[in-house]
Each structure stands twice: as structure tokens, then as C-alpha cells.
Length: 182
Image (cartoon, rainbow, N blue to C red; front, top):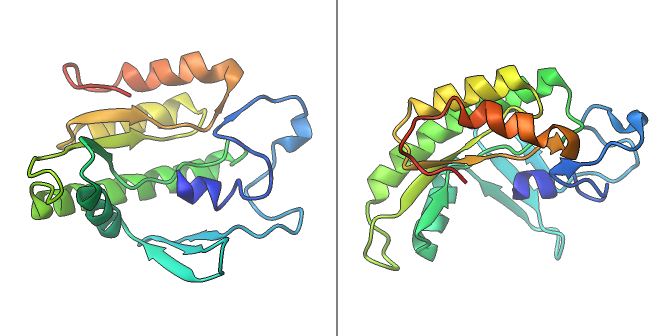
């Protein structure tokens, strides 16, 4: 979520769920108002600039898993790119594909790390279905992630309130039965 909140949404008042009241808001992700994002997304990870002191930090799928293992949460999530509801279809595809590549890397690192040192227990690893408000992308993401070795699934954000029902439905209909969904 920090990829979104410090990236596309930073300083713009955009949340993961958008109520479209002004159609002119449907513009590509980029700085139009002079507020530069604090997160820069690359194929291997995301660099974050601290809003406190300006220091630079780099987060990869592997580092995300290390941090979550150290925290000892019962359920942890694969590193993903939660896009803005304003992102165009072409960007949603790129972000979804990146999320799928990162998901595989998270599984590998999760297995390598084993049980959490904080709790001595194995944590459940969930993937996050992405694809914005596009049914075809949600279906593709659910099928791709559903074929991977995850304990459960989160339904990622990036849709309007009006299309939330159909968006969540298209994801859940294509996830494996018998695994939790969040």
C-alpha cells in the first residue's frame, strides 16, 4: 500500500477507492500538480524518499518478506503494486505483471526464511489480486496468482465505489476454492 500512498496518491487526495464526481480526474498517473511522488517504482522494487528527513530507502519483494517475517504477523502479504484508480488500462497491465513477478519472488523468499523468528511459527502468505477496475485484468490476476503456492488472497484496491461489487466478484470467481480471501 505504501507504493501507492507514497507514489501515485502522494499529495493528491486520492484513495484506493475513488468516487468519481469529476470525469476530468480520470487522467494517467503522473505529477500534474507539481507534487512529486515519494516512491519510484522499478521492475526490481520501489525506492522511497522519507517524508520526514528525505532519506532514500529501497524495498524489494525479498526485503518486504524479511520485514514481515521479523514482525511476526500471522498473515503476511506479497509485495505488490496497488495502482491508482486513475491509472489507465495500459499502466494497470504493467503493474499487474510486475505484481505477478514480485509474487513469485515473495514465495521463494518466504520459503527460504521459514518460520518467523519473532513467533517461531510459519506465517500465512497471501497474494494480492490486482488489475484495477478492469474485469479481464482482475480475472487474469486471480488465475495467475491462484496457480501459485499462496495460503490465501487479498483483493487489491483501485476501483470506484460504483464498480466495487463487480470488481471483487470477478476476482473471487477466479480464485481457488478452499483458500481464504481478504
